[in-house]
Image (cartoon, rainbow, N blue to C red; front, side, top):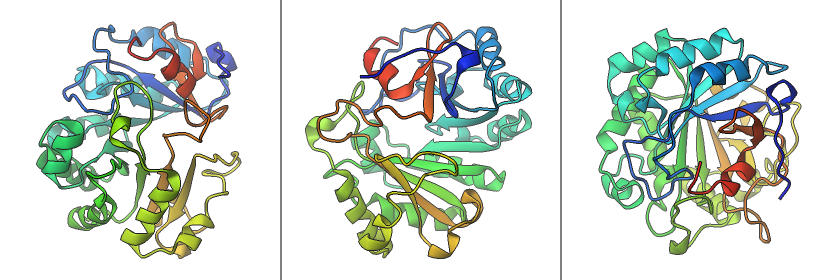
Length: 304
């Protein structure tokens, strides 16, 4: 494992994950930071660190659940004032309240990633996330659409539980009027609390599911596998993007229909964590340094 830490002014990651809180209003069976005893991050020190980044960086505001912080709107505003960009990664329960979504937008938030492991199926949510929350999740997604957010959805596919979730996600998008979206699907990572003992899909099996439930051919999906996810970045063997409509090629990602991201969080055989030696995702450490995301999470399992 190639672990290292950087001073903020030496950060080379294009995306930096910041766990602003370890508190959560859910108890999902797959959680990379299940420790709830860690104090909330000091925001003044965090802002000082991101203000020292050498170039504009995408800050991924996450937690356990970042909406547990009452000062989240202030955090968003201050990140934007530091001349960095930001996106919110959330379970979406609080976003089922439209006035709260409007408050986040007023603070400067434009991009949101919402986890939808069960699509619109309460049984799936109960088995994976231990909460029947489908109605709140769909309401949150509808609020994001109504308030014109850029939207990504995230779904962990658990073998024998939500195998048909890709098809249901397409139904949900149609239901709420979401025409432009990145549907991120992944298998289970061996990080923190997880369901890997229940069996796990390989990336190849995820691709087969994607083909079966969307009508795309496997050959077409694989033709996208060795392309960089974003311009001017390296190919990531554990993740790739593919558009539902081939005509979307070369167009702006969130304005050209439905895209899928297929991520192998299970990692390649022989590796204990995915995305070895990648240079896209960093994580802010508890002492405000920047480290490779997956390496830092694995080294601090059940602690930070």
